[in-house]
Length: 149
Ligand code: HEC
Image (cartoon, rainbow, N blue to C red; front, side):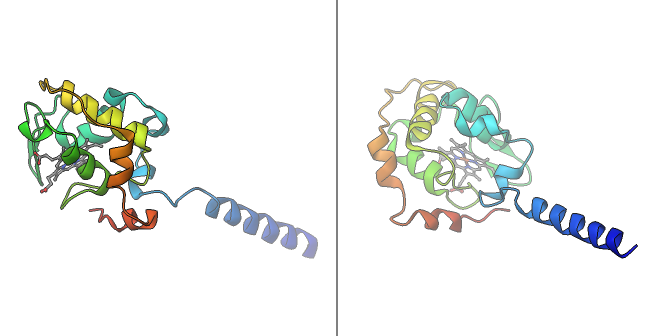
């Protein structure tokens, strides 16, 4: 009997360890089922947009007004030059979450190019990996300061 109890206790603590070993260090958004693992590895601007951004800005970029106010990205003159969207995507702003911690430079370029050339926008894409790298905070940990609501 004693051996059985010890075995059960050992099994329980093992499963507790297994639970704690789950990756949780990314943003809370990473654990949201609506953001599949594919969304983070894709370098396709459209896939990234539809996975990460469409929930707030709508699949066609028309934005939304409801619990919050999500600006339209469709036909948005603020997207003419990539510096602004790059900064927003990397660092967030107000209720716009920061994506810098889990998107690499190439992914941010792909997303920005998508915003500039799709969703009813017809701008000359000018995003570069270098510009994305420069938009990142000096210490990578800083991007985790983004507030998630
Ligand atoms: C949780 C909701 C949410 C998600 C997800 C989100 N955004 Fe936003 N976004 C916002 C809000 C809110 C603002 C307005 C921020 C402000 O008040 O300054 C905004 C602003 C923006 C702007 C600036 C628009 C302008 O005209 O000033 C861009 C560009 C943008 N978002 C792109 C993106 C991209 C690209 C993604 C996906 C990587 C994304 N957003 C995901 C909520 C969201």
